[in-house]
Image (cartoon, rainbow, N blue to C red; front, side):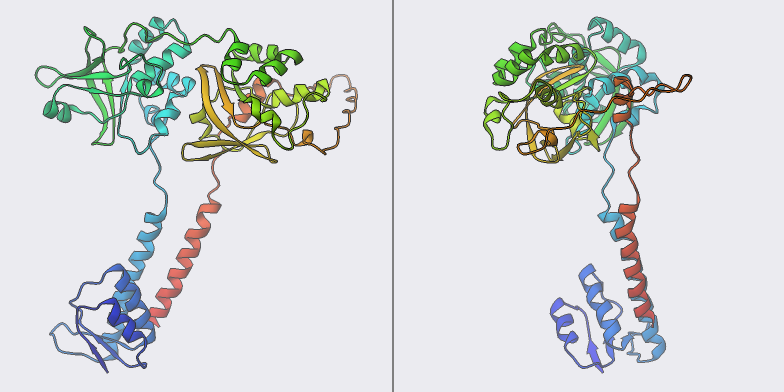
Length: 458
């Protein structure tokens, strides 16, 4: 018989593990931590575990041993329930999903999605934030003040996304102060005009205003949702505005934008091949352009664009563009393959890790470097290497001409390919993630727990 009194350290557990198989006597009054539970679980299986009786005397009966085993089994069962919950990822906040439950902010939520500001908010899960929302009427006023320009509205929505947590209690305690916003974080604001002022008003009131002198104070009318020191949604009476907020970069000269970004070779090829006109025609409908720098064309295995046929050059240049509006931040949320402007079936997939975003063609990866222009619905991004369709790599065989389509019988449905709009919609259908992948580890863990518990109770 081995008599063990508290405290039970890991050294004691290790020593007991090397003792002969003898009945083990342990007092029931000592606390069991997580690692001790593992050790005792092992010892309960290896030794005859004997519990301390309620009266304080040592009890060596089989009934007491079974009682102690049941206690350990119950603790193990609790661990089996809690561990998967702790290991499973916490679902992050989704601003558009939250606002979907408030019909009075329907228009505000619509513009959050169209401008992709929602992705900028959702990507900052570890940042304390306060979103200043506008009622449908106030949002209509903001859109009108912005001339219904999506790029200008995006500036305003960024200004209404404050990079700190605020509620009535905090403002009344600390008073007036200045706070940064998403608009200030972009670097597009002049000086500190992208900040907002937090204003402590009379009685229980408080509000926000632009950082410029004499700006009107937009009072908080409702604390929609507050999660102290993490996330808040506050309704304000009117949009926060200032002179210059709605100024946006010009995108009329795409060639000049490309050249200034260090993509002169790409700009020249686009102009020479006529693909530049394709880009320009798509800019008002939705276009994301990945422009490689000049050095990218000298990389190993990149096809020689000088000797490339006109058709392949067109395919290459169109492969570096998406028929939809995506910012660098919004690309992090993309799942599956993205269709490009090229007629090739091969698309690109996004590989995101932290703040780094890369595009995978299946043959190589290219890092998304910088945002040159973000002007909804057009975004110009630079990439470190040229995106090349797999069939255009050095050594790949030339694609055979496609056979002429057979004539469809009269009265049959048209066999034309889907329209760009239909394809675009298909690209952005949200697929429900499969639960099978997540259920496998949980199922395996549950099975292991069952075996442990069964061995304890035998």
